[in-house]
Image (cartoon, rainbow, N blue to C red; front, side, top):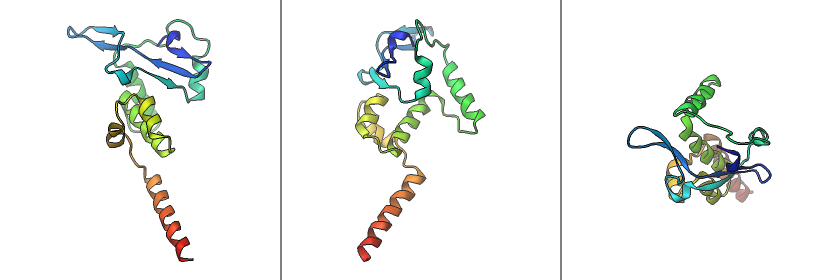
Length: 147
């Protein structure tokens, strides 16, 4: 991640390019992402992250393979949370957006999924709290009809 990938004035991160292993097992940088929807602009919605990114120049973050994965899992473990790895953060993003009633197309676009069916079938999980709230709303509706 470099300063060219971030616009702190507009609270945006530009997701473009990828770091992957080539067929010789070498870690390389590519100019393109895995697929067209992976190349996207993501809004920075975490105020502390925006604060940390402001006034950074040049390379902001560079890591060796698996470093981010290991660190995310360490943070989860240290806080009594299930280890999710980096990809699990996408699940969390979609599930939280679903829980907060974020427009599904926004979840799809910001998360970089090619179609909403993938988001709906794989990434969104109705939380127990949401399910209970939905049942209460239905009960309240029918109770109001009987009054």
